[in-house]
Length: 194
Image (cartoon, rainbow, N blue to C red):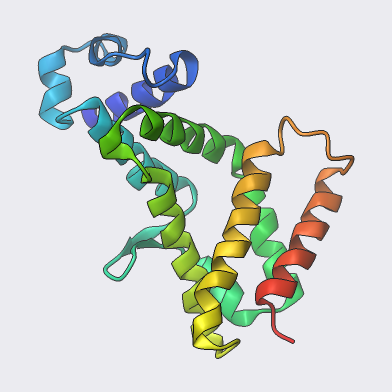
């Protein structure tokens, strides 16, 4: 319970104050505990950030542990394997509903990675796990040549990440349904069944 409270407080404070400006004392104080208790659960602020990515982000996206990739989203693998436009559209729509929860964690992760060398590429390693899900779905479907599958996953996830991180503040002259239709068309062109 205390560990979860620390995670909650860390996410809230990192979002409000920024990663660098938030101290271990701030987080412990927000939970009503001490630095000693914080360190009993997390050896450092950086380890707390890693847990936010590994646990919270994966929880929001319904990703589970994977011995191959660190984590996997079986629903993404299945949507890609299926490859029909409607299946891809449904997965993208469902994922976009979670963007308000995803965005702060990714933003904080990138801020933390810029500040602490040990966290460099933290978000990118996590994105690599999602790219591997796309690759696994393409492999299961036997679509595209083996050397193309990973890169198609890179392109698909780069689009999704950019749109997810910028949708709330962007003025792209599209409503949500239009944006999802365009994203679906793009994903279908990259990874869909023909």
